[in-house]
Image (cartoon, rainbow, N blue to C red; front, side, top):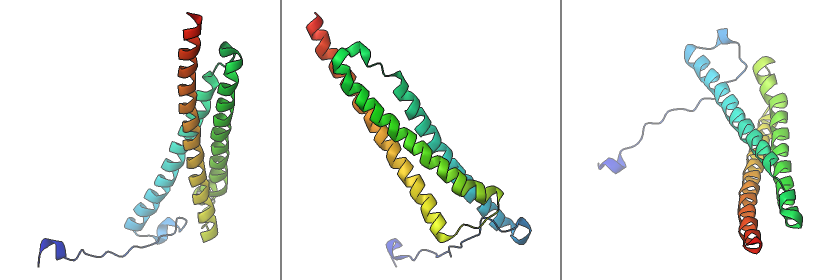
Length: 154
C-alpha cells in the first residue's frame, strides 16, 4: 500500500451545547465549549475593531480644499462611512441578540438563531470590505485630484 492510499483515521465530530451546566460536562467538553465561546467573541471583536477603524478613517477626509471637485470625494466618503456604520449596527445586533443570551442567559440557541447570527457576521464582513474598498477609492481619487489640480496651479 502506497503512502497515498493509507486511510486517515476518522474521529467523530461531536456537537456540544454552549449552555449545558459545567457540572454535567467532562473536562474535555468544558474546554471545547469554552474555546467555542472564545472564538465567537474573538471573531466579533475583530470585526468590531475593523468596522470602527473604518468609520474613523472616513472622518479625516477634507473635501472643501478641492473645491467643486471635492464633491465626488465627499460622496465616496459618505458611502463608505454608511457601510461601516451599517456593519457596526449588524455587529451590535449580533452582540445583543446572540452573544449576550448565550454567554449570560445560558440560553441554547435554536438552529434558526444560529443561522441569523452567522448571517449578521457575514453581512458585517461584506460591509467592512465594501467600506475598505471605498476608502481605497477615496485615496486614489485624492491622489488623482492632487496630481491634476497641482498641474494646473503651476
